[in-house]
Amino acid sequence: MRKLVSTLVVAAISLTALSGCAANDATAGEFAGLSATCKSYTPGTTADQIKLTDSSSKKPVVEFPTPLAGSQVQTAILVEGKGPKFLGDQLVDLDFIGINAGTGKEFQASGFDGVNFASQFIGAGGDPNFCDAIGGVPQGSTVAIYYPAKVVHNNEGIASINVGKNDGIVFVFKLIKYYLPKANGAAGGVKDGFPQVAVAPNGTPGLVLNDWSKPAFTEFAKETTIVGSGEAVQLNDKVTVHYSGWIWSDTKSKFDSSWDKQVPVQFQLSHNQLIEGFIKALRGETVGSQVVAVIPPIDGYGSTDQGSIPANSTLIFVVDILGTEHTADSK
Image (tube, rainbow, N blue to C red; front, top):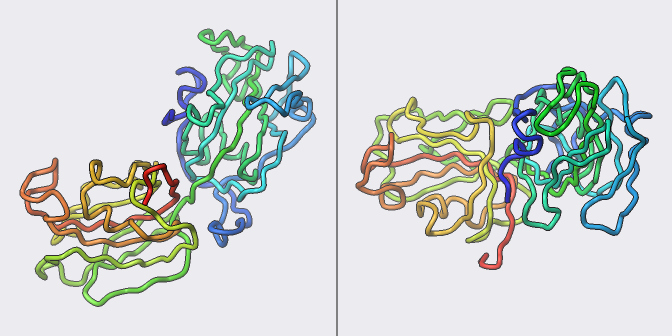
């Protein structure tokens, strides 16, 4: 599976992940109560000229008059899905086609084979701005997005893909799966003496413990501070999470955080890939949950230094479970 859609338009067009934008109503299910961080997509007469001509093919076949031209970014829903609406600041699995709007020629595409799709974090303000182009579009949809030459390459053209200075670009996206932007569910339990979490509006966690001089826990312990309504995580699932990790006894000892990198992570919840404490923290928890786990050395890195983590360290992780996918080995 391709990790980023930055390969989508070669190096000429970068897909960056920023944040912020106008808010809309949330969607249903696991996403209920969440606010949008991207604007809703803009339809229009330019995008409406892009037609799906073969709905039986796994790879969409589209046609439009060339040169296709317009002054604004517009989106047409070619096939409307039935899943949750895109809110923004989310990881998205998608297949894609890139087409020169001036000539109608395809310059790049994913496999549309269930394997070679892209997994891309889409936040507001990207270049091109995909967030506002698919804002409010239901999961499972196939969309066509028109980008004017001025917007997509500032009328400079992209020689590496034979896009001229006056050529716009059409992207066709098959929006396979949306992941939660952050934990979302009912309030869970709070244990006495347990590290507590303060959460920023975007979901970024901070850690609070009244007395960091207390001895670290000697056994694994966890609490579920937010209880999600999604399916339960199983061993060997492919899990999507946001996380931050600290070393016990020092509130400034955060050693890693996907929130700081602005991109969720995906991994297989298996014994040969993760420390045992991380598996104990997530196995059996539900999508949408936030878990705080205290992991002693025996379930962490033991007596071995691990980068900035000293030997024999007790670790604290705050993990938001954004999605899970069962595999043939899940149990």
